[in-house]
Length: 128
Image 1: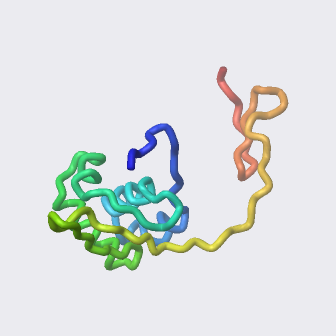
Image 2: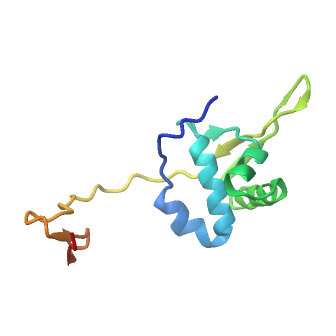
């Protein structure tokens, strides 16, 4: 399946807040790559070589990092095989995030077009 490079994906805040320190930067990167390849069914199958290419590292680093994600309970790895032998693994993403209350959004740019208001209500002058 061809990956659409014009889109975007989201990393749940709960992942960073609850697991970021435990899995480290590499874990956050690899989990993000898995999310990028998930098309809505909480599973994907990018090769470890492909993930390594995305981040400029080697397959061993990806393999060790996937093991950390498995240990943290974030990913389940299913070995897949075909007539020629093993193919890419199937990764099941296990993090379930409970829905949160929607915040009422505030206008980012003030009506005078010269100020910016943050979600917390802080106001800053814009230097156009």
